[in-house]
Image (cartoon, rainbow, N blue to C red):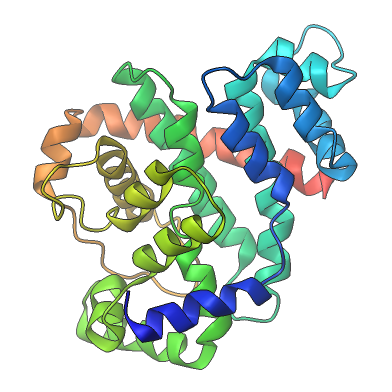
Length: 284
């Protein structure tokens, strides 16, 4: 890690804190010996997060036939993996608002982009019959977390990066690497390490703009790369720029889904994202 990147990562400790319980739920839910009781007990340590999850769980979005009255009930009815995703959704929305307040990037638009990408990634993983589609969903939701760090700590420089990317008609991540020697994807990967998230998070986030770079391709990085491209092609981005996104053709081929399939899934992802955002804003 370069000294400049190391310094930037050290500064992230001064960002508003993402609820530690949300991360602990993600770690616990991925453990082979975890149980619904363990996940529920972990979540119960954060009453405000628990309330947000219950509001989401009882929304029409999840189509519950009966009211979910407790976190343990939610884990049993929805399953540990779904509750893991819900805890991250419930934690991300207010955190983005705190972190990006007054920083020139709309937290609502960034969250919309991240959430839509996550839903598309989940649909792609499900179509490909991956064993745990909630894991790609969670990683997809966090894929641009490094952008938050850039926006907060390099606010003025970030604006100039955006303008340069637009003027030169080059991808923003390419400009970031040219100026700093690293991009927001690498920052996001290092931030996952700071948060002690499972290694798979950092690996997929690190390479989501360059999924063919590592010697061994990461299937989740491929999914996020293609989903990110599709979502941005529909104009769903952070709002501060409409930068060029260069599709990695090899990653697209590895994903093995047609454009017609992807567009069909994207339509559904956009609808799901809009529905959940409406619910989450009311819960804020």
